[in-house]
Length: 207
Ligand code: GAR
Figure 1 (cartoon, rainbow, N blue to C red):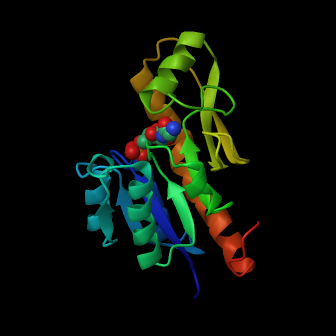
Figure 2: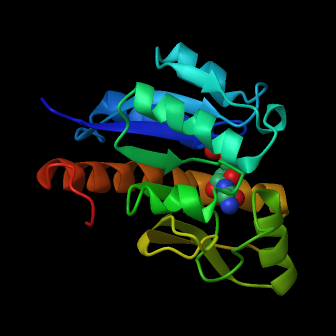
Figure 3: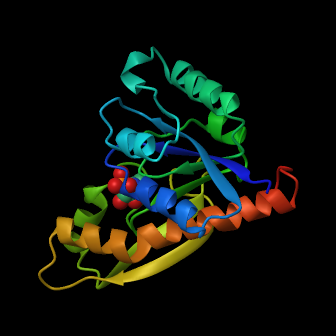
């Protein structure tokens, strides 16, 4: 069966990547195939997860590049090598330029660990998002999968799921709850939805 070729971009532990790999194996993702994993640093544990699943994994360390343009050229070369049609940002913590994003309209999706438009945009990533949510005293948070455009965390929302905040939460406890109850479900689901859409539309731009 023809499948949409998906690249997953990561920076760290890769639990969302693991959820994607597991979902593909379980048939939850059936319209997409993860053909490559690209990490922004060589020590990302996500690279091990990809290798364990038999998926080609490449590190493109940002610090080894002289400029953002060179960094993105290297990423683009890997994407072209594997014929990628959909990019999934799964805990990818470096911001992509407007030039890069413009080349992939509605072909890049991202998972963010809050209910956008709360606690998002530049500087809000990883634990910091949950620290900000606790500081504000919100009683409900969650996760969002959205298309990526030139505004950080500003693209069209695809899926959201809410998660309760409890009285004695720490940023770490809240992060884990948001991952377990929202992120690890939403990202595979959104990947399937968009992969299916791309297949249906014969990989034309503009969903
Ligand atoms: C996840 O919580 C993801 O939502 C977040 O980083 C974590 C990565 O964990 N992403 C952002 O904050 C993006 N702004 P993982 O490497 O275990 O998937």
